[in-house]
Image 1 (cartoon, rainbow, N blue to C red):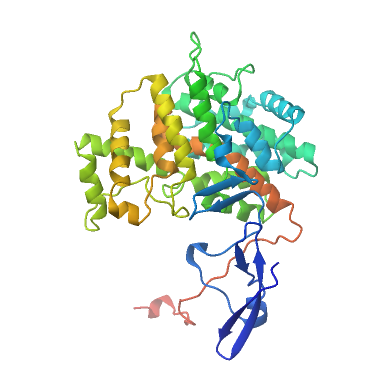
Image 2 (tube, rainbow, N blue to C red):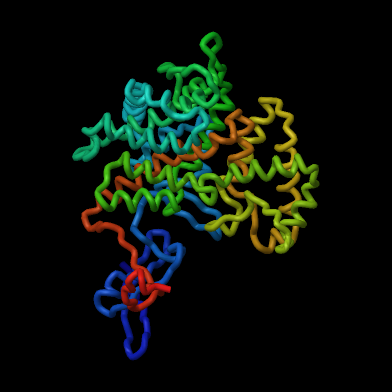
Length: 431
């Protein structure tokens, strides 16, 4: 806590409030006693200026375009062989794993990649065209029925076993969801393949022909998952923390995160980008025409994938994904009109004073969408991919909330604006 104090003057009261200082120099006014001592609450719709916790997991500086996991800049994960599983361990346990820990974690994931037959059989009772996120959420909740020994993990080995099941099985659930929708036979995991390659195998292999995973494609998918792994107290992460604060188990809390992510303003944003690009192509519109339409507030056209709630600079994740996208395009020899439109839109926006002055740069949703398309992931699976990537962050946030001895159930206040008091009227006397 900082030695500084903040003063709030209200009516005839002068209220002194303590100030906390984060390790990166940010400050927060402590208002926890404002209501109990002074009968006041703060009003902050959408909690855009309210810190709901102290966390050591992820740091963001939106003005400078900085994102760090456990202090490590995300740019340092764009390595010759990026490893999503390594990053997952780091987020959850607070440090990079040593060689033995990483090997053990990888083996444990491999041991738990198959679905319990009771869970697998439930796919046949779901409509083939059911929303993939609905299936993902329900299957994660269902895991609580089969692994009740992990509902209250009381030591690290038990917690690690539960975590391993979630991280491993989520990709199997996702791949089976896709195969079910396509009317294709399920492809079981291959224990010889690493995490991302195994997922692509389950998605695209056929019984008579195994999908060949090119190294650059596996690298790109690792980067997509890594760059979505955590992002401070966003909507879905906050949902996980809120549910966890009631002492709900990990499966229930993560399922809540999936449902929050499902919304088009959160995890569905890259789907909006692809729908926009498709509409531009089908309407035979020029990218520059769309840029001008986006600047016109009377025009119904909306330009998705530019600007961000937090970043007032170039989204650092977008820079990495842009490079990955260019590498994938080269190796896949892709010729896609939607991808051409995306390139032209970015070029036009980055050279337009309106976008420059307002700092409306391409964000992670713009590049994750076109990169996933280049990899071969269908649009209706984009948000599922986001969930797979975000899962380690949700788990880390759940763990931090669960292990905090001072944490209480999260219960926001409200500013009531309804009738102060109204008498009950018998139905015969109502107008």
